[in-house]
Image 1 (tube, one colour):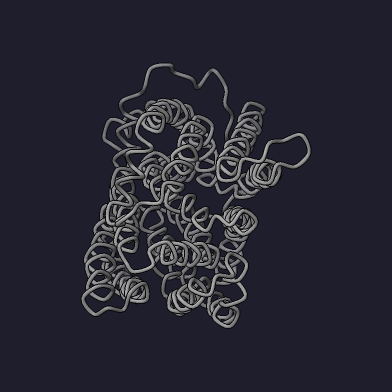
Image 2 (cartoon, rainbow, N blue to C red):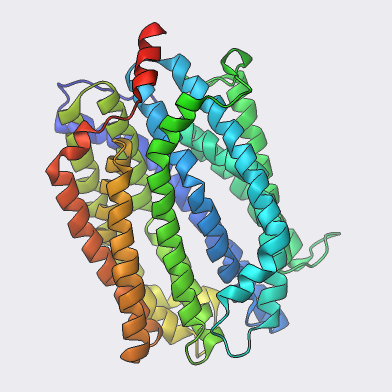
Length: 477
């Protein structure tokens, strides 16, 4: 979709643009989260059939570490989205396509590095996660480490797929990433089912089968995405005339100037979850607490997909507006995206609060797990409209290139409140898992206040996204 960028837009026209961009993004992210939901539900069924209660924990704990690695890759994907949006707003398609090539080249290099980390250090990383467990579960370590190796090796396809989605988002095309996600997820679910339970001539692999299904899904999505780009789509084409085999310093510098703070932000967020998981593993009935925590996380991620979707719309619209040098339009797009997203999240939160217990029962019927998980889900669901505000405003700030302040606010909230306060409430005040989730809710409130203060300052409208050398090159082009 070509986004309308002019100063005479009425609020209703702006809302139409926001919804046109956000609904495919929301659906794509919802499908992505739903697949994670279905994957864990399959693992839950497998665990019940085989009486292996720690199967969910093996996947959940492994994914915590994997998400840290994916978070570090955000430096490239966020930087690529913002830069492509700015160049498309400035009507410079040549530069946008050069950024596409450079981003894919870096993604392959980074994927190879993480594949090596997965091969040699997966088991050591999992043992570190369970350091506070008196008697670490050998199933979590053995099966989880194999799962992690498979997933990290598959990032050779996963990272380029993330870049392909990112650059399409930058030009305002949300339907192609949605199509790629459908291909990826359908393949993922199909092979998960076949390989987890051993259907037909496929072996029964349980947790390892879930890893292989995810790897096959990413590979399918990446190959289809590359074919679309080779044929050309919207303003993007993976043509050799834009290819420079050497890494372009000017482009790389611009990408990482925006992206490194986002990478650190994601690292702060995901590492805080790692620390929380470590301390949850130190609670009484550790295996049950870990399972309840993972179930609550899955349901929370499913619930917040609209917030992420409107955040992506804000990132694109703010980025393109500023690229066209329309600062006030960028501000209005950010405000309207936040308003719509927050209002729409209220009825969703009410429904999820009411049906928290049936959702938890999809994953576990263990009496010790259910009440902990239901309480955690209901605590976090109450904060979902506020979290939506945080996600949309942070998306708008990223689109402006103001990723440094988003990172600072995330570090303050996640580590100053989520981790420190969670440990105090969980251990010192003896609230257990509930204490950690109360701390998460408080963290969301703190970040909402700080994000609004940064947005109202207006300083984000004056951030220089392009380097001097790149601006000069644009003039020469």
